[in-house]
Amino acid sequence: MRALPDVMLEPLVRAALLEDLGRAGDLTTDAIIPADATATVRLVARDPGVVAGTDLARLAWTLLDPRVQVRIDRPDGSRVTPGEVIGEATGPARALLTGERVGLNLLGHLSGIATATARLADAIAHTSASVCCTRKTTPGLRAVEKAAVRAGGGSNHRFGLDDAVLVKDNHVAVAGSVTAAVRLARAEVGHLVKIECEVDTLDQLRELLEVGADAVLLDNMTPQELREAVALVDGRMITEASGRVDETTIVPIAEAGVDLISVGRLTHSAAVLDVGLDHVG
Image (cartoon, rainbow, N blue to C red; front, side, top):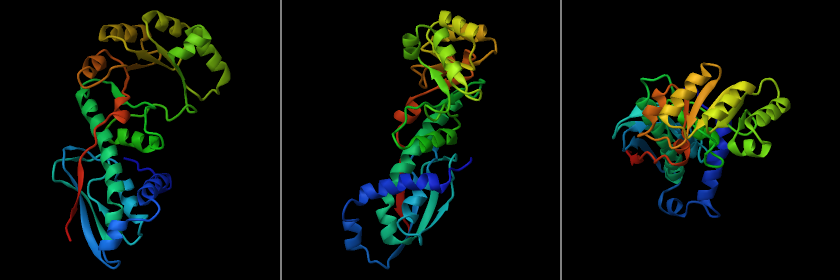
């Protein structure tokens, strides 16, 4: 998969390192490990899953000391089994030990997101639906969390408030109707900006079909309601389902025929993938 450039990743890793180093640096490592000591360590998967965040793990070491050499054996998007080596780093031992926790935190968190995405994507692979994420991301980590979703076989929703219009239920409530909200949005944004509108009922969907939009967010509908909604839309706009989606509910939602299924828990509740750091020399 396409990697994000280091210029986007470095500020995230640098901030995490500065938080960990505090005001006096790594007291433990600097007291115990000679400045000229070198070592080799391996990133090893403890659980089965999908890898994401390897470039951030690499930067957690190379920002501390550019002499560290990192080799990634299982790049982002790779599926791993327990005991499988994800990568290896060799260089000054102080840098390897000081950057360990930041690297593992980021790698484990993002690999957890990729793994959670893959589970859902695998569950609906027999349908034409795709899993996508939301804006329910960790502040400051949106770009890398959304990259982790892609690594797991999912797709991305909008990245922020400025790259698409999503008319939500509260917008409709204040504007007075679906029609009013969509017309106001269309009059304001440029011709390249897509408009999606959330609807809670089939009556709202019928209203939206009259005014027109690029996509519809079918919120908290039952599989039967989703099937009716897909039939009503009949290919005139992209259909997206959301609300209470997990491994137990996603299959009937996908089989209803929607194009996309958005899942907030991918980024706000995914369990960390356990990755360890083993000293090998």
